[in-house]
Image (cartoon, rainbow, N blue to C red; front, side, top):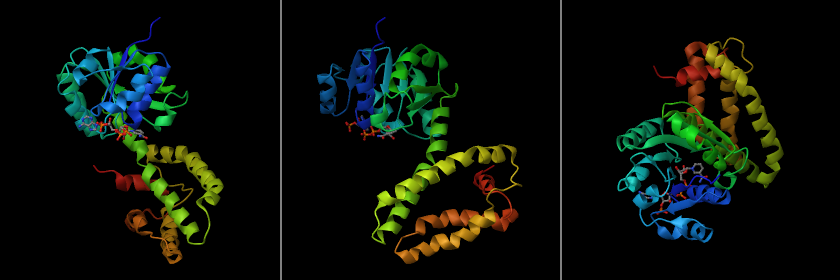
Length: 286
Ligand SMILES: NC(=O)c1ccc[n+]([C@@H]2O[C@H](COP(=O)([O-])OP(=O)(O)OC[C@H]3O[C@@H](n4cnc5c(N)ncnc54)[C@H](OP(=O)(O)O)[C@@H]3O)[C@@H](O)[C@H]2O)c1
C-alpha cells in the first residue's frame, strides 16, 4: 500500500520535525514555508518544495499547518483553495482561537481538525509521543495511520473543534509555574554556590509525588467534596511565610505573591480546613 501524500505548511522547529517524520516514514511530503530557505534540508531529504501555499495544499489530500498562531495560519492559507481538503492545525492557541480557526476553515470548504503536539520537536515520531486532535472525526479516522507517524499516542478528543486547544491549555497551565518553581530553586542553590544539577534527584521525586496526588485531587474537584484534606488550605497559607522568607537568601520571590493571595482568599472565605483543591472553586467563574 502506498503512503498517503502529506503537505506540511510552516517549517519552524516543530513543522520541520513533523515534515521530517513523514519523510522518514516514507510519505510523499510536500513542504511550504514563507521563508523558503527553511525547506532546503527537507528537500535534500526528498521532500517536494511547493512554490506557493495554494500549490502546497493542492499537492496532498492532507495538509498539516504548524505556524506560530491561528492568525498566522489564516494569513498564510488565505490564497489557498481549501475546498474538500483535510486541514489539520498543530499550533498552540486558545479554545476561542480554535473556534475562529474552525469557522474560517469550514467556511472555506475545508474538512478541519485541530490538534496539539504535547512534546518537543525532537520527540516527534516517537511511539509514546502524545498528540491530541478534535473536530471532524471522519478526517481523523481517514488519516489516523498517517497522523500516528507524528507520535504513537494519538487521540481524538471529540467532535468539537476547540477541545484539543481546551485540553492543551488545561494541561499546559502547569508548565510555567512548575518551571519557574524549578528555576527559583536553582537560584536559591546558586546563592550558596551549589549547582542546579544537585537539585535533579530531589526535584524528580517531587514531580513524581505531584503526579501521584493528581487522581485524588481530580476526585475531590469532580465531587466538590474537599472535607477530607491530605493538605489543607491552612497548611499552604502557613507555608507562604517561609516561601517569602526565601528572599533573604538572595532570591526574587515576587512571582509567588498572586498564588499566595489566592490561598489567603480561600482561607478568608472559610475554606481553611478544607483540601487545597478547593482553590478550583475560587478559580471557577460562573
Ligand atoms: N517548538 C516546540 O517545542 C513546540 C512544542 C509544542 C507546540 N509548539 C507549537 O507549534 C507552533 C510552531 O512552533 P515552532 O517552535 O515551530 O515555531 P517557530 O520555529 O518560530 O516557527 C514558526 C513558523 O511559523 C511561520 N509563520 C509565522 N507567522 C507567519 C505568517 N504570518 N505567515 C507565514 N508563516 C508564518 C514561520 O515562517 P518563517 O520561517 O517564514 O518565519 C515558521 O515557519 C507554535 O504554535 C508552538 O507553540 C511548539
